[in-house]
Length: 176
Image (cartoon, rainbow, N blue to C red):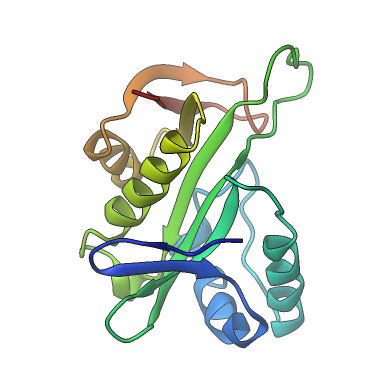
């Protein structure tokens, strides 16, 4: 998987040495509370290592799950993903899979614009490589991520239950 750079950030593949950070990040309810239909906290270093292995298994020229670090000192600040999104049960799967972008950052990194900057870098990369559209889904109460979507120039398409078997606010950004 490739590395993507922005002015202040470097998005790189996850490695086993990141396990303690990932455990700290995803053992915090305030970080995971909006992730998926049934959010759960991470409980062990073994869970973190298994999660890192799954993140590294994404083998695609455009998609990925990146560790977000500061460019100046390599400090880990969060996670950013770009991957096909899981449809809700019973949703027809016709046509190409929708690709979602998502992020979660450590609370120490909140309020610095890192989510917007990291997501913008990945969006620019993906759309320039021929991806026709990228979507984001947010919990209806996740106003911070909705604000990031708007800063990214994503269009709010309303509420949907098409993904993850739960109601979400849907945002999209087409190529061009």
